[in-house]
Amino acid sequence: MNDDVRTLIYGTIIGFFVVVLSWLSIIYISACGFTLTCYRASPLVIRTPIPTLIPAHPVNTSNAQSPAEFDRCQVSATDMIGAWVTAGSPETDAFPFTDVNGDPCEGTFAADIQHLFVDNSIWYKGAIGCVSCHNAEQTDRNGGLDLTSYAGILAGAQNKDILANGNWDSSLLHDVLLVHGLVPAGHSPDVPPVNPVYLYAGSHAAEASVTATPSP
Image (cartoon, rainbow, N blue to C red; front, side, top):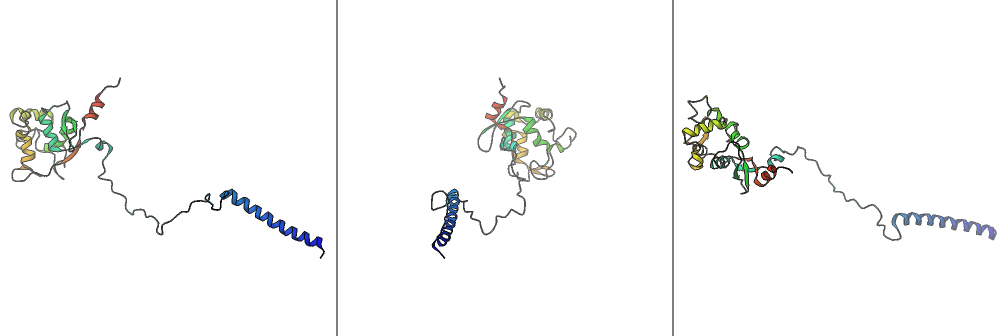
């Protein structure tokens, strides 16, 4: 083999390696830049040995507060009625009360008081509404107290100390709710009063004043 052929073979081999190295260099530079550590590569994903499990049972949200309840004031039912009586028992005007956090709030008879006498299961689970006995028809059982409407309450207050002219501690409502215990058949002095019943009612006084301000 003469020198020319040998030179051609060696030149071809060297040229092949030069092309391959150039191609690899171009790929490396485009992926990693001019550095020995390739920071442009995809970040390392660290996986846990056990995948995150989805709870087998749905989360119970039955006790979650609705947005409407979140904006209202939490107060005991008896404190709410007491604030209404102390304020002079207004029918349509808002009356002030204080929530469990000591913040000033406002409520009305129609929205916050009347349903406490009408609805079932207010004072304890399974309790019948007060108006089941204290209505205009059950005269032998209502004790002269008609709680079905504001007019009925006011008429009873003219004959008995139901509201005690705004003195809550001396009113008949106070004795019935806080002194005499409530039982399925009504109320009894032999049964101790139940724990306070808390509810969401009224609205914060600041929010109520902003809402009541007419827009320009």
